[in-house]
Length: 428
Image 1: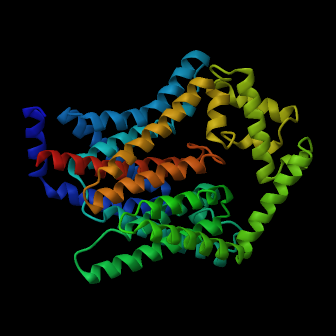
Image 2: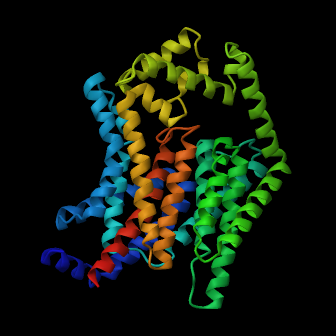
Image 3: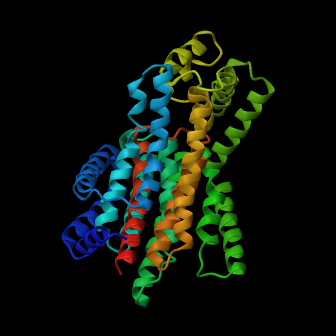
């Protein structure tokens, strides 16, 4: 390491703890704000991003870890810009992918000053408990069939998906050790409460696509728990899956959503040309995937172009190829098919690079973790990548504004905390 870099690092850790405290508060409140008032959480994220950009401009110091995370955040926006250079501009489509640049700046800000221990855990618990109270209010007081956030500020699908993700943040945080028995007990109870709350909110959202992630998230959360031996991990995974499955089957709301989904898929497969079978929640997804695959086959290299999506979508509705509901949707509800249809092989390859690079980013740091905090941050990062990867099979990465804000925060916070930990080790 250069003398200049060493000096910067030493000044950083001998500097103002007040900034670290401010960032800690921001992280703790950002997740409950996200689930209740996503627009306000977006303002907070934007403020943090501007602060991060200011720090980057002042220090002008980037290491290998920074460049790796920058590649994660830039590869998708770059693929959008490249496609538009070839197929025409649609600047509205750049808005949400460009939020990943906010993620990069927040990563750098937290990576420079850090956050206090357990900040992300407490923020996740607060966020999960917030979803619980929103779900109770919406389902049992307002009588909503599917919970879609406070005052409908979310769509039901991403609300349920990110409630589920926060639930698993809470669960994996309970494994971190504490110095006193009392703190261990409090953390255990809080983590279990957060896990149950997020899971409950996800079930009331009726987000069937998100539930596909449950086995993967359970395996990730428990299998990578090095405090348990392999036999205990296996038993814990089987028990948790069994318990969640039993609760699901005894819930009228969940069982009804699953039965409806199975029926809709069956009706579509038996008669895909029937308008009624294509107008259901599951049927329209299957029809959109078929349409998107067809467009990719017709334009394999660069797709139909993001700029042409609205025109092609409206044409499909007008000709009766897809039902009227498709005319209001911003994507085909499968990120890979959407990327291939609109951006061709180039955009599809960029998406694969995004998944592989981000997964490797957190996995490498999980394997190198030297204490519980590093382990927790890296595991949260893996949960995020696995979760949004599966969520995007029936939804888009940037399909909704709240979901995009959730993506940038759940990606940046654990990554930034890992950067700070890495630099702190380098300074020793």
